[in-house]
Amino acid sequence: MGQPISNQNKTTVSTASDRESNDPNDKPIRNLKEFEAFVFSQSEETQRALGKIIAFILHCAREQ
Image 1 (spheres, rainbow, N blue to C red):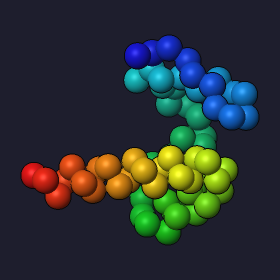
Image 2 (tube, helix red, strand yellow; image 1 turned 180 degrees about the vertical axis):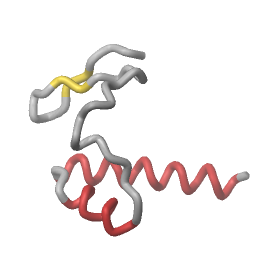
Image 3 (cartoon, rainbow, N blue to C red; image 1 turned 90 degrees about the horizontal axis):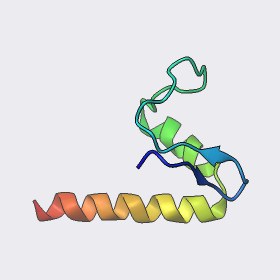
């Protein structure tokens, strides 16, 4: 963990947990409408990946 990964737009994304907090666009998603807008602004491939992650989280929550 902490090693950079690249997304399909060829920009480097840090996986480190010590992110810089001075980024003005780094705001938490506060409600479902904001999350929906975020997802639909992503590429189709990213939308599918997010859907799989959400399905996995819901599956794990249901088992508990």
